[in-house]
Image 1 (cartoon, helix red, strand yellow):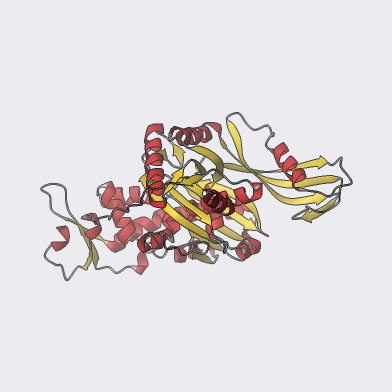
Image 2 (spheres, helix red, strand yellow):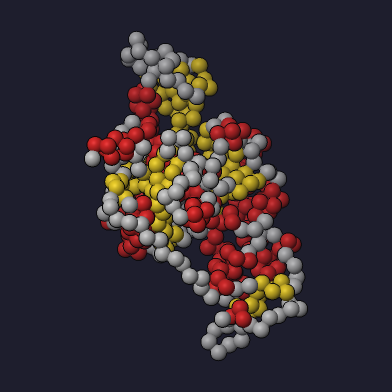
Length: 442
């Protein structure tokens, strides 16, 4: 028993809970001896109670959280108690503020307590009615009139000032997320802005130093975070995401929503010119009706129109931040929407900035605990936020130097159910001049 406790103290288990618009994802893991994140289990559930990043149905959200946490707990043989939860949504705002303290203890050097006092003062700012502060992030410090100091710990000084990036959100939306987590018999140890979490899993320190834009395209929203000289400078939430594209396909191609989603995932492209005229997808008609033929190029035209709108919104935020000319590392796109073919080319075309797709595999350690297919799936951009929440949880725990009672081992064996492909997943593209005998409809 003592041996287990010692082991968990040196590398405690942490849980990240991503409550998204399309999926609720719980990831269990810890930092290994090499500093990498070792994922022990992952659970996913459909998110039926969240709209554009905001809880719209408490019961359905609680049901999704419970289902995801149960799967992750079973797979990792862990009893989950507390979680690090992500927050997003159109209600998120950011502002800049300056704070200062005058130190009385002149004999001692500036320490972490002084910085914590500055941050604590910022949390006492008077906000507009119905808004609450989520994060207070120090940017640059000034010690006795000397500006541009990134880390004042260890310095001598009387007057300590700092510029802060403050992120706020609607109090009701924040309380609803915490309420859902509590109703699922869990405790929220920290509430983390999702683009901040994603940045931890897909951005390097060099990129943050050089100047980079993180664009996280989720189901309901697209989150933007701009970094320069290693400091977050601007955050924004755009109220469009992958679901907007799905709705456009549903209306533009006159198909059911589930078929529209599969068409987007399997055959979607952000650049229509990259597709051939004669590529066709055939989907079954409703009962008693003829099958429907959809041109892959026309599908791409529908997707490109919405994607261009989202990227133009992102470009507007880049220009509004004032850092447009300082982004040496360009743009990193992540999230489920980043899996769209030819997306990086479209982003480069609209913004004129370099672009790459952000994968959360840099921080992941290979392990024998997870089945190979699940480990490979974890490297998808759609898990950037979940893995980022895990990293943020580990960082907080190391900063506080107090192990979280996040999880304890239990003796149940993990069972991973095999997923059988549906008829939607069996759809194929065929060339118009060479139509097979409808076997793709079986």
